[in-house]
Amino acid sequence: MSEQVTAFHTLKVRAASNRIRTLSACIISAVLLVALVVVGVGSTESAMLVDFTAKNLAPSVNHFFGTDWMGRDMFLRTVSGLSTSVFVGLLAAGASSIIALILGTAAALGGKKVDTVITWLIDLMLGVPHIVLLILISFAIGKGFWGVTIGVAITHWPSLARVVRAEILQCKQSTYVDVARKLGKGRMYIALRHMLPYVLPQYLVGLILLFPHAILHEAALTFLGFGLPPEQPAIGVILSESMGYLSAGMWWLAVFPGIALIATVLLFNEIGSNLRRLIDPHSSQD
Image 1 (cartoon, one colour):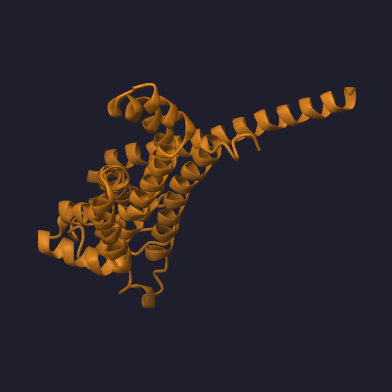
Image 2 (spheres, one colour):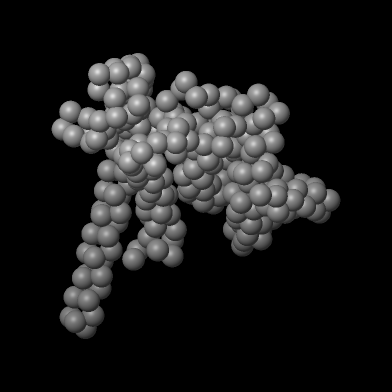
């Protein structure tokens, strides 16, 4: 009996330690992203400064990421570009998640015909290549910041809408919702008291995991020339411009911004994955 108590206590301590470690990883990742945005916003003007006496310099102590053909500091340009990408990702992912919540809820609660129409729309959106649809929407709106933001927001909701729909349908068929109906509780009470707490954790995780997709697609769209304007510091612009100088041996123009973009996406992914471990009842005790 004492061995079982000891084993249970050990598992409990280990689970608590894992939760603390997971929460710490979330906090550290979030702090790094906030620091990136703050530094990027503060260095926007410095990132545009031109100094032809310091052009084409390799990475050094004075210029961590080197300089480009106009003498602009690549570290400042990269950080400023990443902050812009994060802003686009936040706006686009937030708007896209709201669309997903509305359509997913309507599909689950609106009846068979509404569910059929929304499910067909989800399948249609998932069947069209993202980048093609992004280019068409952004070009039709006029490109620029709002063009790419609206394009990303319109194209990234289907997967989350499908998750929201499935979660609400599962909650709708649960025993406690059936008991609430038999007790005479209204639809609004059931939605706010039972369905919202049930769906909210998965919705938040899905929202966070939308960020890396939005950032990558913004960078890809800008790289192809259908996103942010060339005069604005952006990762897509930096990578696009660097392609013409790689053959001259200026490898740092593409390598460091590319690594920084991947690191930013991984930070968002780390937050989403760890948050899922904390929220998911099947893994929260691991």
